[in-house]
Amino acid sequence: MRGLTHRGFNPEGQSAFVIGAGGAGCAVAAELAVVGAAVRVFDVSSDRASALATRLSRAGYPVTAADTPDPSGFSLVVNATPLGMRPDDPLPLDPALLSPEMLVADVVMKPRVTSFLEQARARRCEIQLGEAVMLYQLDAQIEFFRENLVVGAPAAR
Image 1 (cartoon, one colour):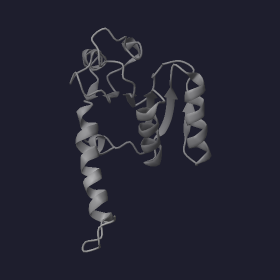
Image 2 (image 1 turned 180 degrees about the vertical axis):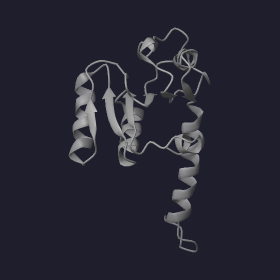
Image 3 (image 1 turned 90 degrees about the vertical axis):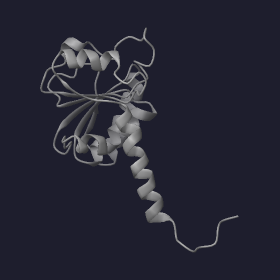
């Protein structure tokens, strides 16, 4: 979220389409839901997408599962899959479904600009690079440890 807000995108009240319900997808969907985005999750395993949506919905967050990888009408689209790490990977969804008013993000860090992000840029979408995940995650970890370490306490053995 820090990467998104740093670039001027406030997810609160926005609609977000998250592709992938694995580890990264769970984290992305949960964080978006916590800050007030309406989240829809797609995964090649519909059971996994449904399970994630059910868990977050039971916790009171507006998350639903999608049957198809169609981001039409969403303001944020996030690829939270490993697709894009290798040059021969398929795209996570049909780029023809992307429109210029969408912000398209990827969690993949290498290559820096994935084929998916290249396709989004070609459709005049703003893009968010995967490296923002790591950059701002480090800030959050430092902040966590500063707030939770007791200075002068004996070291745990």
